[in-house]
Image (cartoon, rainbow, N blue to C red; front, side):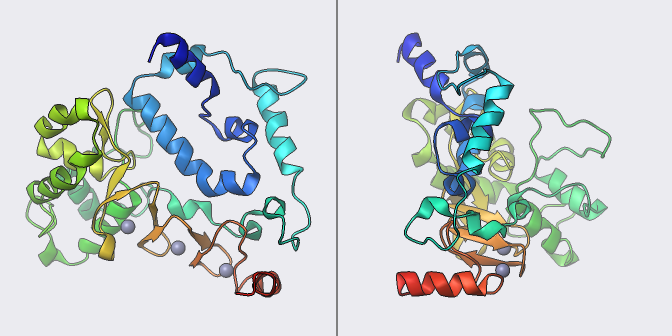
Length: 290
Ligand SMILES: [Zn+2]
Ligand SMILES: [Zn+2]
Ligand SMILES: [Zn+2]
């Protein structure tokens, strides 16, 4: 690809929610795929060290009247005006995302709260650096994925599951690295394969267990993360599944966490919760004759 083509692509690619809104993606789709899509795009920018290309780009998508931050604002305002009648099931663009019941915090990584000495020791045994609330964590520092940390928090409650150095029995770094090498290689670009194969065990493991996923800037890129949940155990694509912190499980991408009844529900963005929005749910079932 030449630099003109690169500039063309960089000018169009959305890196924030506001820019995504300018891409005329309906609001419910933005909420459904947006965060994951932006995470992947930004991880790729990190990986390829493309910050400069992105910062210098002329934004090709413009919103009438103004430019810069102002235009972003009016872009998202425009989208929110599109909310219409909630019962018009024949128009999927008219719905609120899960009727406003989605709990977006369920997919976020853990914070320092609840990180006991035992939790920290195990996190450190897998290559994560300990930091306190007041220490600014550098942008190169990796933080544990919600899936890994939920597994750690559960495991440390049973001392017999924890080795002297903090590693979890049956999930030692060298064991995990074997699985990651085996399952990850096919997802790595041809050109990056040697670097991936030569990567140290600990590096591979920390990255696969981190919120950034199995990738290293300028070296190799995948959209994989290591899941500790049930049948999904092993490498999973972050575009296909995500870990719900409230339910403590990795879920399909179509599953969403309802803040009303605090449970995961299956259904595209248009679907209301059967418990919290029973009328809307019944109306949807009637419409689609489910
Ligand atoms: Zn999980
Ligand atoms: Zn609910
Ligand atoms: Zn959930």
